Amino acid sequence: MRYSYATYLECSVTGERSNIGTLQGLSAAGKPLLARYDLEALRREVGRELIEARAPGLWRWRELLPVTAPDHIVSLGEIETPLIALTNSPRPDGFPPPVVKDEGRLPTGSFKARGLCLAVSMAKSFGVRRLAIPTNGNAGAAMAAYAARAGIEAYCFCPDDTPETNLSEIALQGATVWRVNGLINDCARLVQAGRDRYGWFDVSTLKEPYRIEGKKTMGLELAIQRRWRLPDVVFYPTGGGTGLIGMWKGWQELLTLGWIEGPLPRLVAVQSTGCAPIVRAFDEGATHARPWENAHTIASGIRVPGALGDFLILRALRETGGFAIAVPDEDIERARQQAGEKDGLLLCPEGAATYAAYLKAAARGQVSPSDEVVLYNCASGLKYPMPQVTAHMDVNRPFADSAPGFSAA
Image (cartoon, rainbow, N blue to C red):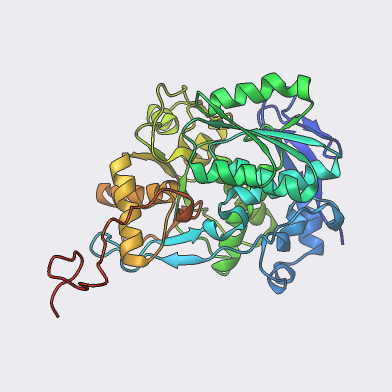
């Protein structure tokens, strides 16, 4: 039995094949490359019972990942993330609690660990010595951590308003990090501009083939956690869209293997009203999204004015019968506060956006009380600004009448 059944890379537009055994970026057409597997051989030689019998975690799926030998793996302990129902948080009457898949439990505190774990593992196998990335924070933190583990130099370009926690963790993990007076697309141009001069390999979203393979394990895990029966609707915070595309790809692979049955979940791309190129393109019936002007939102991870894989995101939404929806920042912040106060779950702003979007979609009739819904929280809420505590108590006058936060029993 092979360690991996990966066989070739395929251009997502032309279908042209590339050698999976050499370092690759974009296809000859300048489009994302997708890893393909010998699924017929895998179906004959590996049953889903074997996968079930393994310890939970990302690497239980090794046959459906591109790493060809265990000594190429760069790992920080990629666990299987839990499913947590929002049983106490507000929801429409008659609706069951939506379930959150909490990716904040992963190494580096976000789902970016999945993609960068695979990207760095493959870079190590090809002998890459320098990596560079444009990042709104969490992807840079994940790349820095895995690059440090692999002994690879890391260079990160971040918009000026990237959360301080992200900048600090990138630096603490040994990467070179710069603040950039622009957005994520401006950072991407800097990575491209320095590539020849500094000899780094670009691990931007979908500009190499392997981050998507790590991200697809979110969808593979969801299948095994639910005993190979997927939910009806999945809300996903969508910037570059690697995870949404990856889950869609992974579920198609499971369908081919006969490990799940259709239909696939309706995929919902969640964006902010301050940066919603995918929502606009979906509503217009377009196959590509026009870049968003003056992008702004507190959910920095979904502040992506233009996504390289926009056509794949839109195709996934339409083929699964899903939709795209945008929510304002005030709804995101309210949802974050409600989940924390009522259910003790600290969502990141992007994860809170999915909860806000679920409430909006339910009110519109886009999801029904009979739908089983999963929301993706992509990072720990501990990585983002939280309410300041200003109340003070005098030890000499405890529980004074004027002390805030108390009421008589």
